[in-house]
Image (cartoon, rainbow over all chains, first blue to last red; front, side, top):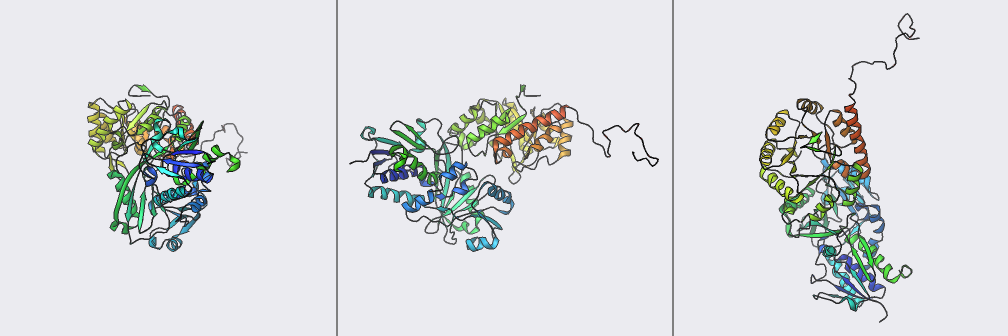
Length: 322
Length: 261
């Protein structure tokens, strides 16, 4: 047993990606989550969009730059990564939002109505203009997290859900517990997000569609078996209750606006979670001796975990071995 | 100019919604040197004090807070929200919004007057978000408001001052009432125009929050407000329908036809 023994707290996307990356460096990794399972927190409700260029609309350049390697990381670590790009549309009266989005982002082409129809036939005739980010991708967050747990097991690591675990048995502790770490980090806050899952066999989409609106921008991400994830609200709140009527109404309206056939969809799930965020909404790695924290993933958990996990590996193993 | 007996350090009021991050918001407030920041309190979040982390960030900006009832569509909802805001922020100031029309987010002026009366009787100092309508303004003042916040244009539309005539009439009809142009301001020049009409302050949110560089836009608005305020105070010249040469022509040689030589 030559590699260091490392405890990763939190089996969300930050913790699982970090655990797998550490195990690849030869570490003996134990992931611990008091939630009782992999993905018991905010990651379970994520969109799973791997969209470095779309995110530039509201995120600093650093987020885009650090996430460029993310697509390749996911493709080489979990099955079913879809690289079909992402589509950004706006209802006719919100076209100014589309112009604004285009000014803030890059790596897209502007599509006209026939081009939209060719790309997403079920949206035919519904939009005159769209932005197409061809290089982006998406994953199903739940499948991806479970695949990472499987992979970790194959690497000799383990995921424990026991109540308590003794830090002293480990050489390093990496805390990836999201909003639960607020008690230790007072600059961390919760950003409530609400989402729904719909099943709608009448519609097929091949890529995430973002629909812009000045107040409630939403995205619809296609999953397997005619399931669509619609999300997500952004509320400055630590409220952990279930989804509100207001949020559900907004999300359902957005789905219906994208395509009226969603009116006949089956509502499979409605949920709420808390994204952890620092004041600048950028995920950070912090070190204090043998304790490392990776937190503040905000809405960039799937997008930025690979790059931030690399930073954790650099601290533990040195940059030359990376 | 005092708002309910309080002199503000600046006539620029800044909303705190829609910024890309609290860090960017803090930079913008600093750059704007805002005299007041407004903050909305969503009712569902208030119950459990769940928005506390964000509100603490707002309070740490050390700028007077004007809570608002944004998103309230009825009198009772607005009154309840105002009462929660008083508990959370420890201020009796409330920017009162009662929305009557979802598409234009146009004030429900009937509900607004009613809510102003209820809140004033409850000890609140009400800043009602209203239209430029003179009769409504009169009723709001009678209901107890001592400040008026007429819209420039619908919330978030960035269209500037839609009804110059109406805003000018409102201003001249109530010369002694502190008035803030709220909503619809999209560019710094719109803010300057509001001060040039004699308004006492402007409230801006989306124009700064959704700018590509919020802090830079906040600076631009600060300068625009200063320009408008100083321009109005300096008593601008009157408009004329014909040119008036700025250089005196008396004594210049003229040809017989009248042209200057």
